[in-house]
Amino acid sequence: MRLSVLPNSGVPAYKQICEQITAQILSGEIEGGSPLPPIRLVAKEIGVSIITVRSAWDALEAEGLIVTRAGSGCYALELDPGRLEALRRKAVTEPLRAFTGTARNLGFGDSEIIALVAEELRK
Amino acid sequence: MRLSVLPNSGVPAYKQICEQITAQILSGEIEGGSPLPPIRLVAKEIGVSIITVRSAWDALEAEGLIVTRAGSGCYALELDPGRLEALRRKAVTEPLRAFTGTARNLGFGDSEIIALVAEELRK
DNA sequence: TAATTGTGCTTATTGACTATACACAATTAT
DNA sequence: ATAATTGTGTATAGTCAATAAGCACAATTA
Image 1 (cartoon, protein in one colour):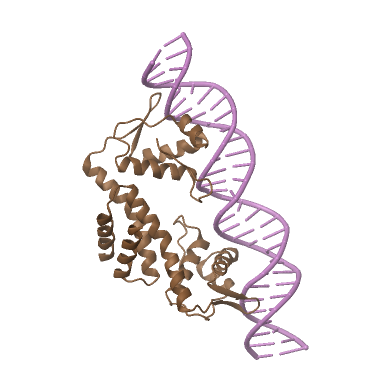
Image 2 (cartoon, chains in turn green, orange, red, purple):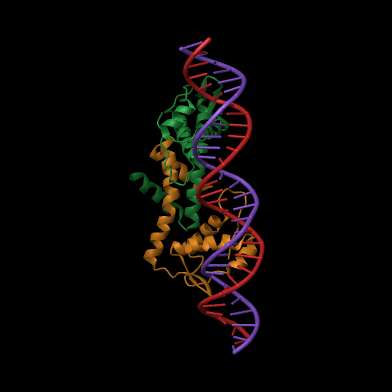
């Protein structure tokens, strides 16, 4: 389980955890059906409260990415390809719109926006 | 002065104000040297506390976008073209990186990312 | 049966955000 | 000069999200 939390990033710890697990599930790095580590262990390893890890797990369950079996543990859901693709698409849309919206508000034209993205990807 | 605040957007009111004014200054919609409306008036018009407007103004001053003259008012700074371009570029970089970073974490390839942007811009 | 794991609950602290209200200082308009 | 306008400074306070520690309980697993 690859996890890291930056305390002073401005982003709440539970959200950082949630985003990282989400990306790992949607990218296939975490396979469907595989178990997540126990919350107490995760809390100890990354140095946060159990509450914080649970908040992240709750959010993941609300998103339909994991299932909880009390007494057993939490597991990544097995997602069919169509649903997986839809979720990946949904996850990328919000930051995409934030970017294009900001860029347009700043007066950038469409071709400039494409150029900015291409340049960023080259780095 | 074009301003609107969505109370339940999750984004703090002072930040919404700050972002809108920033975009209007960097896009040229607000000309350099032109006065901003009095904070009491802005507060009343958009239905927030004076403190909230001041927080936004403070942030704008910290960013070097406006100047304050006590007793007179606040004015958009006159920015030379080079500085203006640098600030526009800086303002667009953060959401750009958030987007490309998220997309890559989700396993999208560079050409897919460009395609996503192009599609979003078509809307 | 014992260990492990998630749940539910209480209590508490910290900080960001927002709000009201008043007195004060600097500038501008009359 | 005088009054009105504008920003400043300060005190007080309420709400909420986020985080934390601790404990008892239930379900599963070894």
